[in-house]
Amino acid sequence: MTVLRARVLTPESPTVVHWFEDAIVVVEHGRITHVGPFDGRPIDEDLRPGVLTPGFVDSHVHYPQTRIVGAASGPLLDWLAKSTFPEEARFADLAHAEQVARVFAAKLAASGTTLAFAYGPVFAGATDALLTEFARTGQRAIVGPVLMDTNCPPDLVVPGTVALEALDELAAKWHGHEDRLFVAAIPRFALSCTPAIMRGAADLARRRDLWVSTHLSENLAECAATTAMFGTDDYLRVYEDAGLLESKSLFAHCLHLSDSEWERFATADAVVAHCPDSNAFLGSGNLPLATVLERGIPLTVGTDVAAGRSFRVARTLSHAYDNALATGRPTMTTELLWWGTCGGARALGFESVGMLAPGYEADMVLWEVPPWAETAEAVLGALLFDGDLPSPRATWVRGHRVFSR
Ligand code: GUN
Ligand code: ZN
View: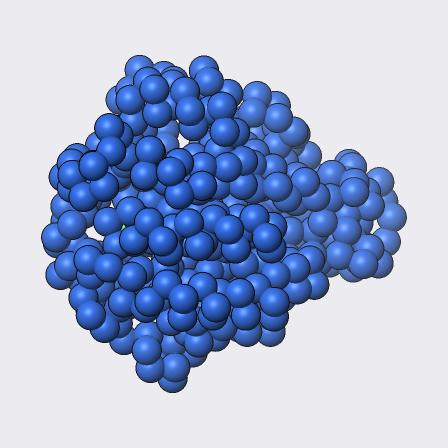
């Protein structure tokens, strides 16, 4: 049992946060068993004036893009060709992959991310390297190699049968590991996939109960090329026809969907990964937030490194605030915190993380906020919008410290 004393900020719902100026948090076997005002009991560690929050959820991030943050070669299709595909091809070299996997895992932890949905490169070995690193560090993640079997540089093409067999092996090895590592089926995006590999991915995902994820309707040139290549009336239809539109399907971006596409998306109970920093950096557009929320579609947020410029989910949430204002559906800080923590976790099916409350797993981050931030509102404002806030002091997953400085 560990008894921590700290200032504590935790969401309870999209509209309610709890703030304790002086609290104790008791952790037993990786789970929180008590959170309440300091009551004089003996403590193991005094973390004040630091502020403890739940860990953040990054629902969309690319591990083989760790080294190209800041590659300003957008829009999307140019950025992929010039900056992204050449870098991802380097992951055929396992030594390179292992080195970047260590940096990537460390960056997540140092940014306060305790649950990540990470895309790998096409190479199963390089993806295995990341899962191996997470197994070692104790971090929590959903990971998969991207599937690409057409319409991309030859050194990134992996034929469907080979890629799906390798994915099946990765899933057999890792899916459900210590109930904190999971494997996903990730047809990268329609333009780099044949119908056969997408159908194969959908079948495998169903058979092994894997999450499916892909990019959807990010960029107008991409949308036009997709409907032309597949001869469909709209973008979503391509994934629907392949059996990829399901309740365990997570779609990144979703910027230019029609009413009909949103209707089918909502009916399927699919999930949005909102990537506003990336959308700004590649000039892709804005997410119609009102549409998503009015239809009751579950929303998560993704840094989308390296089209996103920071591993910090808090930065992404700051961009989500801007996107909300720009699209006429303003948001508020409690809602942003919810999307970045408990709301995001629940949308991905993780019911036991995202809140500092009894029964939840101790996935936590310790922040250093300006000394004048003394109310919930001021602390939340600093966490979400102060671009100069230092990186966290410490990050825990299941009560195990995965980062400290
Ligand atoms: N669409 C296909 N691949 C990618 C990628 O790596 N990043 C982004 N932002 N969009 C994509
Ligand atoms: Zn992406």
